[in-house]
Length: 461
Image (tube, rainbow, N blue to C red):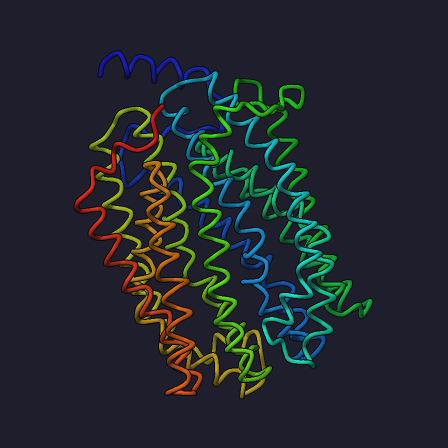
């Protein structure tokens, strides 16, 4: 172990100032310090995502708001696959970084970035071709469909900026740098708000203006990330002359990221089926659920941030062979996430009508959203457990387990439940119960796996 410590000390001496090792010091302190910038960054990302919906909801009409606010599952269906690969790349990079293996850190960074270039082109093509068909399959109401087509055609025309940004963020976070992505999100969020107000409220470009603002702002943050990565002075620097696919490294990235990518996309299919049933209740149900999704994106951020911090923490410590530290970090992360989630859920339960009205004025839409909130929010601790447990397992290199578990319950069971249950209980609340049910089932499987498995023997160096 002393030899490993000496290697780690030499590694720290040569790394860039933004890269942070989480293999020593206070476990809680390491996780919290890394998670706080992630929280702030995710908060800004939510404001970024909400800007379009808020501006459209206040300066256009309910149909336009429904088009913008209900498309999260559609975008995740395509983008989520490639982002899953990026997460896998982050696990590989952080494992080598924790072990002090400079050569393989460099090879992994360049392989991951080159994959991002090809992935962004693929996401653009697939999105533009499939969006109209998917919107029709979702039973998008006729009065909402024209706005949806305009918004998502523009969005996917510029989706390469989203994919590349997530690749860059995965690389930075794998190195323990959660601050610079935060800085760039601040800039892009402010840009998005200003441009959305300009294009929609002043120029009256409608949902198309909101989509254009999003693409421009996301592109700015992507450029800032790339410039930062290219200006680093050590072995973590991005050098376009070194971009190439290293077959062994690409295989490790795909092996770790493909299950998460498949999971993201297939879960989005399940959620699209749920959204299709929500759409059948009309535009107000779409708006109410869309408003809930925006609020949930904010109130659940502390838990999301912890689940995002855990893979880097676990992977770095396993790379440094700090197995006990990795286990203790997993316990702290999961328990703190669950406690925070339940506190948030109780507050959301009582404050739902007020929170939802920030996004939508319609009493009918608020009523639908409140039904959903008061069905699911007290079960947020289960959602937190599943997310954090999945983060731990991904950090261990066992991304196949979260994939199978979530595909089984968050997709398969969710679709079967909604399809069957609505035939017997054709009310909106029936759809809402799909979420606590599947969160409970996935949590039970994750708990059994974490208790019974030797999860510290994951990805080899």
